[in-house]
Length: 257
Image (cartoon, rainbow, N blue to C red; front, side, top):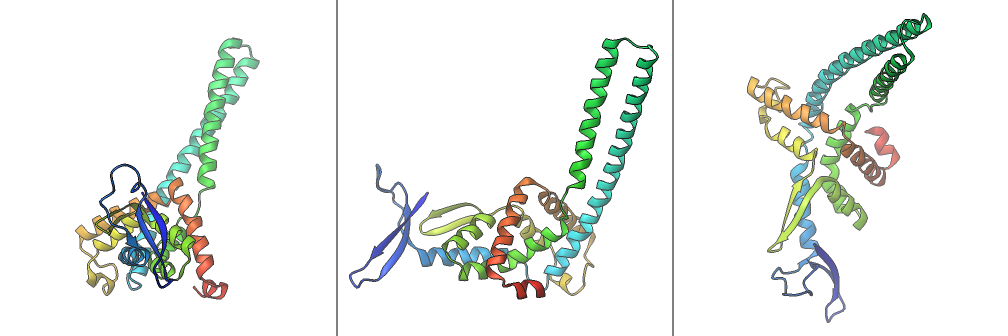
């Protein structure tokens, strides 16, 4: 953990440094403090490394859209299966009521079977409702890729809160050793970086004419990204991205985009 500390030199100039939070407790920490400008430059290098090149961006969106189309087809098949199962349970409930009306089963058996079928019907309806209330994940994918392209610029022009939000959104496990920042990319940004890394440069010119092996790797990364876009973890990321977009893009620029 690091702590920010303001210092003033003999000329009255103020500087902001970061140092180990525990440097005053017990043995002195051997790590040196680092000036905020130097630290932020290293953060900028990290953010620029996550950016999807504008020429590749439409291609990545296309790959994600194709992967998402496959997922939607699978979702349709799953919904059809759930609807079929729900109709079967509802039919069994009606038949069970008919048996009890004709006194063909005992009360205890009727109550137990009705409770079981009712619980199953509730479970199936909840699953169907979850499917219906799912977000359109294609737009968040575009927001994600667009954010990776603009994060470094927003960081350069943002205030302390903006910078903190950006690093918290895209970074993971930041550490300092020898005044050198080590920070990993958080999901799903690391997956997008891996997806871009597996694509040949000539693919930008040749659209999606890639070899089978590259296509297989790209498809695997796309599936992973689309799965992450449907998680609660990403549901917490997109509001932050939209908040930063609102902060840095005036309405006329957002409308043009």
